[in-house]
Image 1 (cartoon, helix red, strand yellow):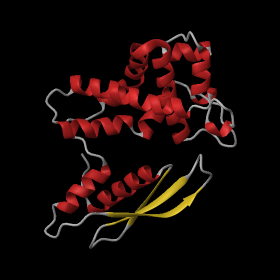
Image 2: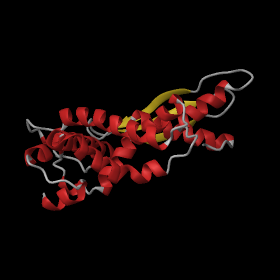
Image 3: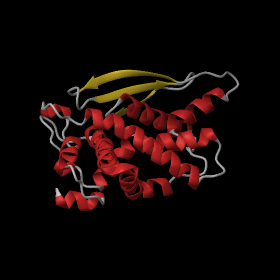
Image 4: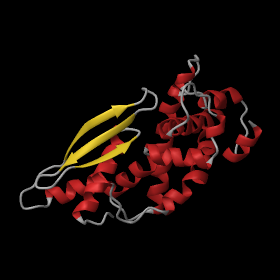
Length: 216
């Protein structure tokens, strides 16, 4: 664990917390990372909200909320977990670590850092592995579903995009979804992802591209 701790920027007093954070529920052990994941998600939200308030002092609440969502979503957590090198240290049974598993582990590690070293330890990890993602945020950033919704509502005959799952496959701990999005007057588009939300975003993104709309 010493190599991993150096990447985390923190040495644990209680390494059992780190071991638990890296143990997926599929391993069928008593101490999985599910409860830590729950706590880590809240700690991440607090630290990111704190960071965004400082970095974007002129943003209204709505814009900050969109940025917070972008930084706390599954894909952002998985990206941070991959950069921190969590993958090789995960205990997973019956599946290779995917975006969902890596994201959950990353949130659990944040909780472990918080419980072992307080908010400063968790904040140090988040600032290290989210800094590039924060820097990449624009001053007016919308996710694909929000952009498509706003465009649909701005038409002469307002309507909301509709989404439906057309296919779900894979085990419960590593599912794959295909979602179809429909907008009145246009052919449907589909998107895939490791979660319903991710698939919806990808479907909305494809619809925006088909419509010739640039996404902020």
